[in-house]
Image 1 (spheres, rainbow, N blue to C red):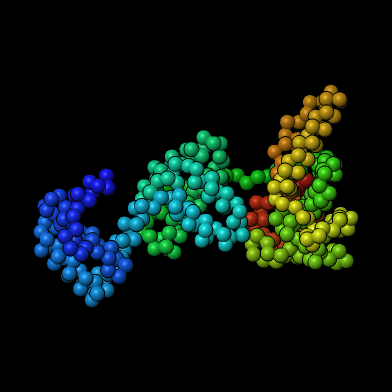
Image 2: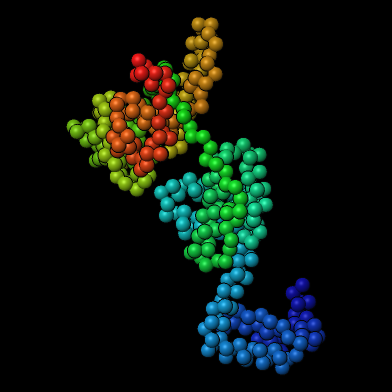
Length: 365
């Protein structure tokens, strides 16, 4: 193929090649970073165009800007969504608080067909095919929304920061909804059973971490970053630094939280809980499984049918929902509860509050 191309195009003079045995002449020049590629029927026309463009570009800044824009658009045709995703990960994602989660989404998104498409072909139909693929993998609408909004953010950044002339295709589709918020609370007896299962963990920190999650409504990441230098047992408070919303937050500690912290061994690195996210996730899942098996064994011994939802479908983040609701049950008002949980808006605080109707009925008398 390379030999044939050399035969088809012979160099006539600087920046001009002869094509098809002399039937056309091709001009290829780069002036001030702008690439020009045009074809003419005669050598005289090609030579005149070359010389004129050199002079025009040197004197006419408007022409230069137009050609630079054309060059950017020509380069955009070679871009795939995967290339933009990688650049977004390197330049944007790494600076975010939730960079680890977003990098995981970018890697997962790169496995799909849509990542191989040129960005000009990422349109409504391509997005719909991607969402269909996600639904086949049993993704929820909330999960789909996160990936679609990631694609939208990449296109927005490409236009505003990287100066590509692109249309954001996400504006042309119906974005999946957030779905219903989780409302899983601990049922009667679940807290005690989970606490017992935490005590049986090989990890000595899980029991106290579990207690503090329920007593303080703090996020898992906030607790894992907590250092002993920010724990004030004499004042029954703790300072959470660099929280999810960007602010520091002082939280009150209940007598149970103070007691649990007091008995905790001190780690070398100064953190209260020297654990990784995956260690907490794994230990919590195993504890839930252990508690469920013990519950089923008790039901079998007493000839009772186990409740299908008891000690099932539990996540560590559900403890934040449980703790937030308990604050209101203890008589906290909205502002007091928000100061503990760190929610910026009452709407978000409401999503984490799940008061039981039977408890409200008892208050009515």
